Image (tube, rainbow, N blue to C red):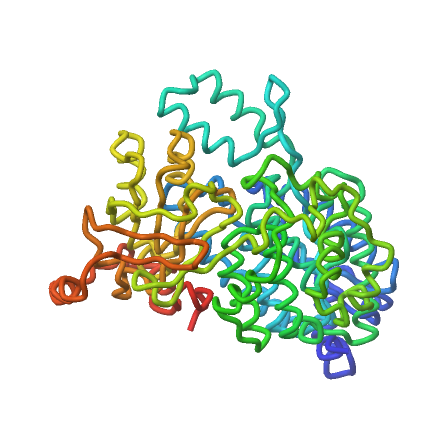
Length: 553
C-alpha cells in the first residue's frame, strides 16, 4: 500500500506517532488510508452541503474496511465573483486546486482518493489532480440545485436572474419584478440548476467514467445524493483492491466519449477549456478540431437552461446521463468497452437503462439538431479557433454580419450596453480579457445577459478572447485565439469594421484587407499588464492560450 510509507515498520514509528496524535487506533492505521478531498465551504451554494456528502463518504469507506482522512480543496462561486475583479480569480483556481491536491496526496501517501467537488473550476481542477496523481480515485459531487419558482408559478434559474437585470435596464421589468427573481431563482443548495459549467462538468465525470451513475444529475437536496456518497465511499475500496487507476479509465477513447456526450447534452463552452486540460494531465492530447469532428456527427438531444426551459432535475427524472449515453449507443457513437469506476464497462453500466422522457432527452432519431451543442469557429479573426454554444443561439443569428463595437474591457462594454449605445446588427468585441490579458479569462455573463435582457439576443452578437458562463445564451463567441494580449488579430479590430459570423460553416472573419491590417500591426503596442503583482501576475506569465485549455506551461 502507498500508506506503508507513513505507517509500516520501526522506521515509520515517528510517522505513526503523529497518526496517534490524530486519534487513530492501530486497527484504523492498518487499514487502507483514503484521502477524502472535501470542497465544503460557506460561500458557495453548491458547496454548502458538502460536509454532509463528506460524512456519507467517510461512512461508506469505514463500512468497506478503510480509514478516511479528510482534507480541503478551495472553490469560488462564479455567480458571486461575476462582474468585478473577483472573476479574474475564478479560472485560475483550477490550477491551484490541482496543485494543492497533488501536494496533499503525495505528502501523505494515501492509498485512494474520493474527490468531492461541485462547482465550475473545482470539478476540472480535481479531475486534473486525479489524472496527474494516478492513485485509485472516485468522484462524488454535491449535486445540482432545484429550479426556482416565481410568484406566478413559472420556473426560473440563475440565467433568468442575470437577464432580469438587463430587462430592468431596458425598462421592461420593474424593481418588484427583479426582486421576484432575486428571491426565487436559487431556492436550494447545489450547483445552479441549468446545464451551466458546474453541471456540465459533473455530467462529464460520469461520461468519462470517473463517477457512479447519477452523479451529474441527482439534485443536491435529495437523500439519494447521500446514498450515492456512501456508495462512492464503499466503491473506492474496491478500486484500491483491484488497483483501478484514473489513467486506466481516462484514456483517449474516454475523452472521445466525454466530448460526444458533451455535444449531445449541450454543455457549457467552458468544457472546451477543461477537457483539454484534464486530458493533458492524463497524457492525452485533444484539440478543438477534434471537437468539431465529433460535433459534426453527434446529434444534440437536450435543451436544458439556458438553451431551453428544462432543468437538471428534469434530466435526472428522464434517466440522467446514462439515458443520454444509451441513446448515443443506438448509432454506435460511444465506445462502450471502456472501464469505469463502477468496476464495470460502460456497456455493463447501460444494461436496463431507458429514456424515460423523450421530451427532455430527444430520441436520437428526433434530435434538436443533427450537430452537437458546441461549434468551433475559425478564420482570420481566430486562427487557432473560438467556441460558441450553438444550441443556445437563435436561428436568425446563426449567420450574421455587422459592424464592430470595440471595447478593451468588460466594464466598458457593459456600460455601453446599459446606456443603450448598442443597437440591432452590432457585433460587440470585448478584448484583453483572455488568459494572459485579463489576466484570468473572465466570464462575460453580465454583458451577454444584458444583451438578451434588453431584447437584443436575436440581433446582436458578442465576441471576446474571454469566456462565457454556462448560463450564457445567444450568439456569444468566446475563447478567441490568439488573444489580444498575445497579438491576435482581435487586437487590431477598429470601431465599425465588418465582422462576419457563420456558425453552420464554422467561420469567423474580420472583413479588413491584409494591407490595412499590416499597417495596423506595425503600429500596435501591447498594453501594460493589468495586474503586476501576486498570483495573477505569475499566472499570466505561465498560462497558455485558450485553444490549448489555458494550461500552465
